[in-house]
Image 1 (cartoon, rainbow, N blue to C red):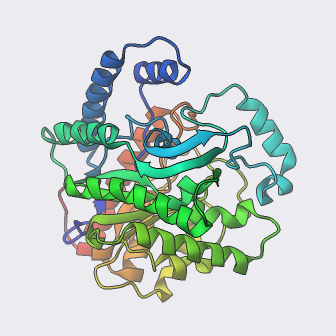
Image 2: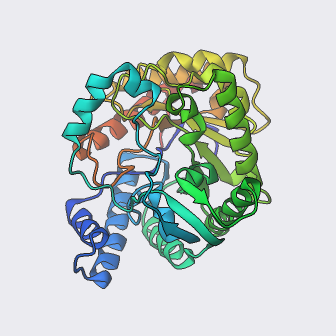
Length: 394
């Protein structure tokens, strides 16, 4: 994994807003309406090439395909795992009954009204495991990998990564009626997802493990204490490390966030209460929220954390939680603070979360997203000049 050896490198979390023409065809497919599969495949490949080129032109160093081939960052696995059947029970992925909705019922009721009718592509109610869990998404994954490989041939970037969901997130809303024990069921899901992680790395890309559920236990479970939620996170990490076994640690980056984009968020688990568990994850780099007002102060936590040799931080220095475009100097200031805490070579500039995690949910307009990335790149340049004491070119 590339390091910031002579300047602060830049990246993001993965999901980017889909173009309207691509989105309309994805919606038609999801609704079971007639669509041209060959035309959709061509369009995905074309739009991936375009979004890769745009990332490179802006100056992002470590890029991806925008997750354009997926309906969203979680439910895409419904097409890639066998052994499950739909159920009539709720998925457990909503926010009803959480600490947030209990504290701000009026706000979340209003938000739910505004989002009524928005179709979440690929979403389903809870699914029931009725047979052996196996990975069946080889063809879909290979298409994603081939599209990205073709796109990066024509651009100059440092590296490329491919996001993949963690086993813990896959398990949310899934009921076991096949395996003899919960442990056996969890291990089967981890084994299946390991096949995706390994294929990504074998193809020459970094794998990014997307894992919001790692830190959202506390928000989602008002009846649990902080210590009980920490224990759940410990078990979560144990399962993830099992899934990552044998995959080179220096090809893995881990991303977590709080699942709420725009909201009060007073119940986000604080970094100080989870960082010791997060750093047990077998990954070279940790990506996390640090660019929004709820977590901007948490750079201080890293002053007292000893990273393992070679480990990197990818703090969010731009955010998905508001439409304000961060000033490049603010981005630079944030990066310098992290560099002073853990060393300049151990910091890569990132974003708090993706900007298109659910394809049909458009909270931040695409024009604003790209402007935020410009500030990210310019802020990294300013920080690099300050940290290396000279003008720095990409």
